[in-house]
Amino acid sequence: MNKRIVDIIIVIGLLLVLFVGVITAKNMRSTASKQIETTSNIEFDVLLRSVSLSTTECPIKVGDKTFISIRNVPYSDLDVVGVKFVPKHIMLPSKSPKGYISVLDEGQFDMYDIIVRVKDKAQITKDGAVVGGNKIKMGLPITLEGKLYKFTGSVSDVSIEGEE
Image (cartoon, rainbow, N blue to C red; front, side, top):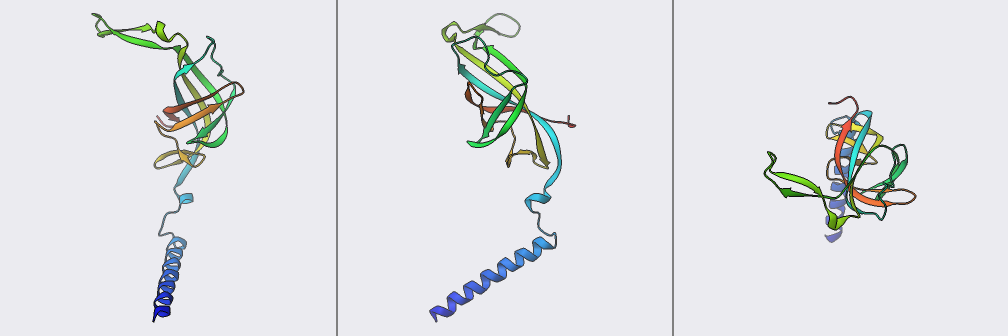
């Protein structure tokens, strides 16, 4: 009796696998490769907050290549197409129309915020751009690594070529 129950479970499992295979072959089920609509160039910004540097020069330059890791998984070298390098600022209340002013934070003279724009070719799906098997969306943790640096930040903007 015990042997018969195991046999029935195995047969049901095989029938289930066969059923899923037939549905996939008849295009009734969407697989990952069928979800890709097109391939396009994308650019995305990586925000590196409070980077400590003992120099006033940014180690990341436009035109350089930087190696990225997405969620701690190594991906590839990407071209750097833009860099914004600003010292740390603080907001102080004021009587200006904005209600605040931005001043350089003298207490953190060696801290910088860096926004790095990188370019890559991505697979475009209905859910957005996919690079290295990961959907590139704002908030995604990314590590940038070069000859002299290794910084961790997050995606802060995504631009897909041909989309506005």
